[in-house]
Image (tube, rainbow, N blue to C red):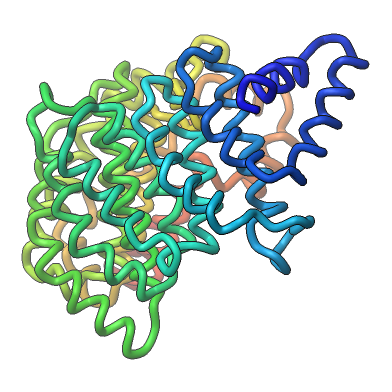
Length: 404
């Protein structure tokens, strides 16, 4: 069946409409046949098959899981996958997370995350150990990257108890990756580890009541090593031309913002070091930001993006720094850290608000566009600075009066 599925998958992307439609009908019919899901897994993992076909097999597998895995759920369409076939799929599919092809790792991770929605942890208790084990064993960079990508996908759908069970084993391994020597892990892998940490912090942070207290108790011993790692990651300004460096600092700032928002009490005095590093970074980045962003024509510079389309630029780093400072302003206890340097912060924010060359030209030609953009676009550094100054004025009263 595996060879036949590979041929049908290739036909499903044929430029000939009749061939394509016929292949799509075969795939739909195949979903009703025992063994179809397992054959898709084997096709996705077969490195003798072209990468594009393998990726498509994993994508079709995700669709198959949604339609045939759990009766009565979502888009279910009979028949339901047999228990023996489910077990075989759960056993084989994680192998795809170590594939040399990044697109295969991602597609397999998506399929695993879809299955985990129903089967984890009751029918798939070993999944956590498999993913954390792949990170701990570090047999290859591909296996670590695949496990991190999959964890980032499933953490958002975890139940509170699942996160509490996973975090103690996971966070030290993630911390070891980010703190490791540059020769051991790429900046992209380190950023991925930080993204998984961010997902954990967010899930734990929004818990309420008794679970909130339990989450804070859980995080207290786990946070301290991370705060040292944050301080080190923010110690030096990133190279504006290096998306890897910008991405690592960006993700670090996101995690630090979550700690400020949800776990400041758990972090205690250890939070001062990374916050101090972030404050210095806010001032140190200004010259490079003016040179690379404010003085550039819009058609001269296209910011780099990762494989998911996220911008990894100095502008995105500055935006995240501003968000962190706004988190501090909103925090009733931590906002006092801003008081001594408030005047410098206000002046620096005003400097970051300068119009870019492209904005100046566009608004000079069309004043109405200026009014519309200033009112509607809240995603720019200029807009974020305006919101920060407004918050500081409200939080510090006459002390922050210069913000208005």
